[in-house]
Length: 250
Image (cartoon, rainbow, N blue to C red):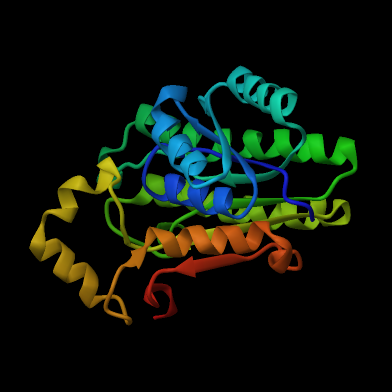
């Protein structure tokens, strides 16, 4: 599959920025998205400085018109989108008994509903153009394992895993591959990790549960996404790949 245009959602920092950078080095034109296009300027500048091609775009996964506008904008400027990395999402740490309907709907709309319709938009365009493509969705170890105070987030991430499996079967005849990557605890500058990352006792407890005894690096996630989107990953589809130091193997 020729490398052409890939959209990376949530590419302003952390995992998304690392994935965008890896794909830029790998020869893709990377359309980087965030709720405000300006938030991706640093990511785009880094890709361009390294000799790659990238552009910044606004995307609100909660609004169908935003998804449609993004795909039209990227396609008109850079050509058919043949790759997608679903990375954007929101987190929620709360006891299940305290989760409100607004909490639930907010997480599901951003993480599951919006990601499905973003995936649908890219898949629909590929099928119409009769072109192959590859889609990678960032799930989480919380989508595979139980954990306290993570019910709503984990359910949304588990739903993404099943989305990948269902669409891999349905779109396989169109030469569109879909896979999920499920990171465990990562070394990242995500705002949602700022508090726990500075809690030494919490971090030590987390490390004690990981067989390899270390957290994954965001570059490991980026390299795996580049593999799944490239030629060497073309026969891999419908899979969920944990990157968690062996946490989910126990």
